[in-house]
Length: 375
Image (cartoon, rainbow, N blue to C red; front, side, top):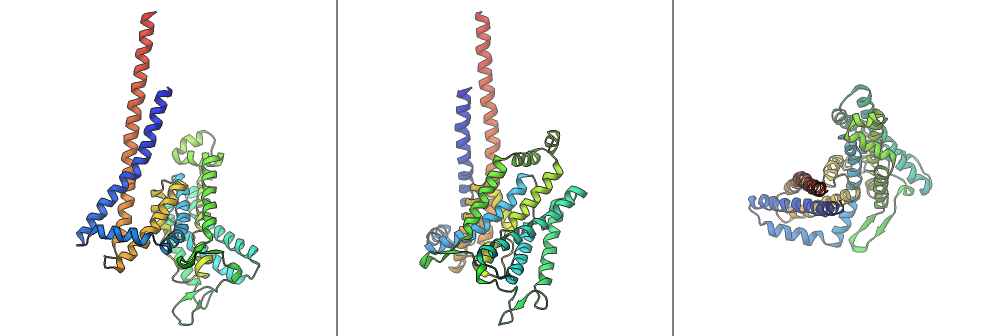
């Protein structure tokens, strides 16, 4: 049995390493073919991406972007672990950021109070907005996919209405940018001065703590076990005494609360207001990042950094003459390759495990038969 376990462990490690390597090779090949089809040299493109992405200012950019993308990936992953497809993360983080900006602009408290209040408001609003979809699913059986898509549109309409100058917003001096009231300086989150490379957002610390909490709660607590059990089989979880509806609603609340943090790095470290040019679509980026990271906190972190790297380097490719659609193509190819590679490796690993177990059991049966004959 120990020999069998040792073999399975070794194969598990090989397969775990083989899946991302297979996806990476496949993504590079397909991307190279796409760039070649545009009439450009893919090797020149890859060389520019490596050199530009390794610059110190690019590394700071990647870390800052990765902070936001990481929070988005974790927010989506909470739903995925529950077998829920929370497409509404995009609307949840925008509603949360808008509400936090309005509240923060109206308060003038010491930083030790002001910043936690803004963050708590964002998490509360994100949780409440996601809770609407949770209530609809548990009480009326409405698919979270449909309800969250509609809630995204409703969030856009509400923000567009409230941010008007005659309501909660204001125009800039040029009369082109509509925004909430700027946050006072006590709301500014700390940054690390990295010299010519730029400012590293301090909210990266909060993102790391959020990832640690996600790992601990879902992987090391009874609540996390129940949540994952419901995601695997609702009937089995219900038979063991777990309230399925309660877990569904709770997971939506947690996903929404985490989504509320997504806009905070931009709000507290960069823009210090919510305006009509606030980043959009990060919730959908979080879906891709959660898929790439396999819902694991470390995997999500690596995927978030990869996404920031691709965004930084492919934008530079556009500057030097490559098609601007290259970024979307590369991102889509990577997601597809990762999903396909992991599924192929999973099926191969399952087949090999069955073969190993069958061979070991057959050997044990043969040994037992020989002993009985000898007796």
